[in-house]
Length: 452
Image (tube, rainbow, N blue to C red; front, side):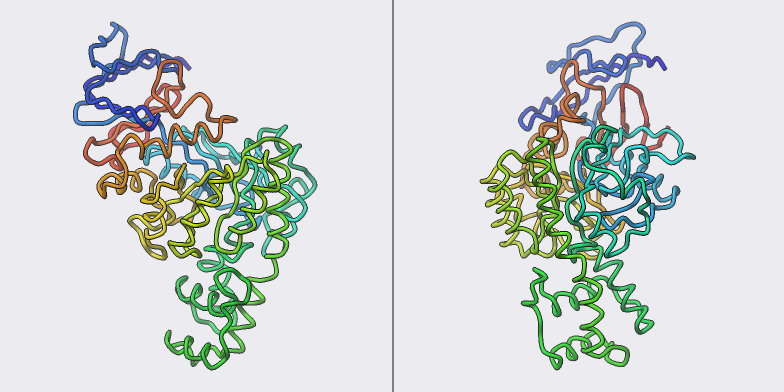
């Protein structure tokens, strides 16, 4: 379908290169490409242009989110769980779009590229891709913890076959389900506790129980004796429903079984990345950080991305230390908004702040956090108002930097320059998290915050 050329004037502009901010600029889009950018603002519209006077706004490249879940119709999460309902998938996609995202990598890892859209899905404006983690131990870990969404087409395939069919990256290697992370806190462990005693516990209570029994590194070092565990249970007024012995068994039986398999699966993905020279997303948290350092040394050709490096299983000091070690070995450090920017139902921003302030962050994504993820632009706005980064550098974390890390699907986007794909977001100048308009592939898809 032909699109009318678009001319946008009188806005400030952030190009996505990490440096360039223009106070007053103009930009022309024709078809699906950027055809002109004027930093002086002296570009004039053509007679057939659709003209937008964007005074009071800032134009940025469309956000590229390279670590998201819940946006496809195939198996969900590294646990190979059943797909989310189509209504939920549509909701997640629309949230991303109205938050300025125009390109998204869904990293559940065990879906097929053909499952990006369900048979009844309407076309969506976001350009969505999938990754692959179809290796023996990642599949085995998924089956151990859940696997109810996996069928022969998922079980009897390989990384190479998935790439040939359109997968653009490897991973997510490991996950909150298989490595005792967030999904154990908000889903599997609360479900197991409720099944045992009929009580629904808050994810932070489940996390406290998990850390007490198996430790933040899942190495058993957090183990406390039964008297202390009974005291912890009592502190949450649950001692009428749980005993130390019962809780210990629930935690161990729920959290531990897939861990060994998932750790081996992480090395399988590193080896595949080394062989194929494809970007690979890894679950970076307290149980995996040391392993990722060793794998970065063992597989120097691997293109490793340390996902959600602000994971709550780290302390702030641990997150910074791990990021430095990994970055020194060529690993890209990604941080995720999770629910730690504005929602704060389970997580706080301390780890993200520490990584930003120490300058050890390369890219920014959302992850999923049980559907409670905060927008990327909310995190960018926070960095700006706290004085942690200048706007141009903060925006690059979700645009130009991501395009450089994932050229397999983002080589033609992430920068506002002539010849690049016409993906951009137009935001309030004083608060980039307020998205007014989104243009994807050269056409308006969000206008005045309404999806067209």
